Amino acid sequence: MLTHPRCVVDTCTIVSEFKRLTSLPVSGLLTPTAMRGKFDLAAIKEAGADRVGIAIDAATEELFNKHRGFAVNGPHKWDRYWQAVADAVDIFGLYKAGVHLIVGLGETERQMVETIARAYKMGALTHLFSFFPEAGSLMEGCSPPPLGQYRRVQLAKYFINEGIISGEEVSFSPEGQITGFGIDIEPYEKNGSAFMTSGCPGEDGLTACNRPFGNERASEPMRNYPFVPEAGDIEIIRPQIWDGINLEK
Image (cartoon, rainbow, N blue to C red; front, side, top):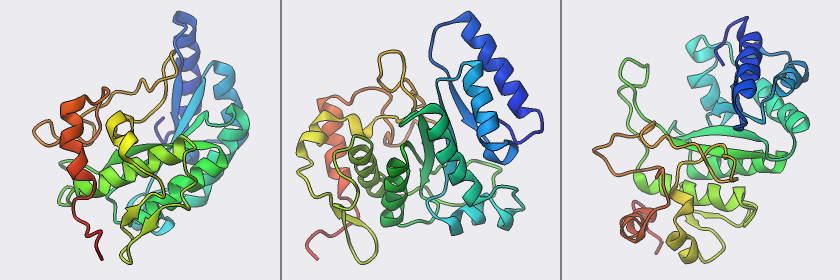
């Protein structure tokens, strides 16, 4: 959904036409800035959307304002986006709303985990991305987050989204890096699901979103696997998890 006066009408038109032609589930990626709260959310659901996503992107209000709000002359408001998450949960139901968060905008791992936990407690799931410096953007000169940082946050997101931990069990270094999850992570390393592309599910209930290179280069180590990682992939992933952090401190 674009930030445009007609975006809600156009979204409803496209969703209803798609539902007329197919029985596949439909997700809507919404722009709260251009919407009238629950009224428009109800209209989008009535048109046939099964669930919705809201791209908050930044883990803190300060970073949201810096990258999406008044600091870049953006119209978007932190509180309005979170209210839209609450409204979407009310309209579409528990865990039928998704929050997009981008690792690497300047937040600490602690701040990202706290925001993921906030979304889950509200009844929304997190869909995780790794920052990628797009050419021509204001952040084209910035670097992606270290791979170790992304792997640790991926695990935290997976554990919280799956209801395995609440987020309070996660331990952090003084710098805000994750040092533990309060559980044995080895079985989940072997499973590999935590390192897959996260997003809306398909008809079988499994993640259907398969954008493997939306936040990385094909020539670099894969951050989001668009398939279940195999044994060889897991051997690559495992040493990446604790890269860049000294657990012996």
